[in-house]
Picture (cartoon, rainbow, N blue to C red):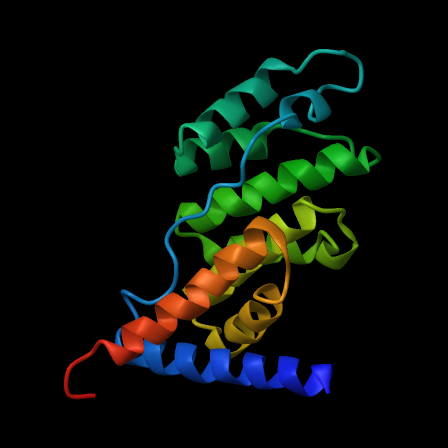
Length: 180
């Protein structure tokens, strides 16, 4: 029974979102999303140095200041040994977010698809899934995006709330248009 309900919610989200996107693609979809930065500078430190390196500090400063283009450059320049999976994953997660915000959603999708999003621990999994939703929307893969949004709307916490607000916004946008 619960599975049918979730399927119905996801189908409704896809329908409302698709109608809204097709009627006004420029105004559909949420705005930029910047993953909160808390202790990441400590996690993204050089393996040989116990304090965050200057390139990490610069990259996160650009990201925190919402300078997407500079954050993309700085995060790409931050070289991480592939063997350091946590640092590599976090760097790529922030890079994907900056890429979406820098109007490079195709590259963001490619970056996110290498991360194994569903295996990430929370809160990073939620941030990665929301960033993936944004990238899907911005490349026009709306059916996939709205299916993901339906799933995100079932979650608890910040990302679930954000997704439910997006579902409501999409529904209001399609109802508020006169003569349609």
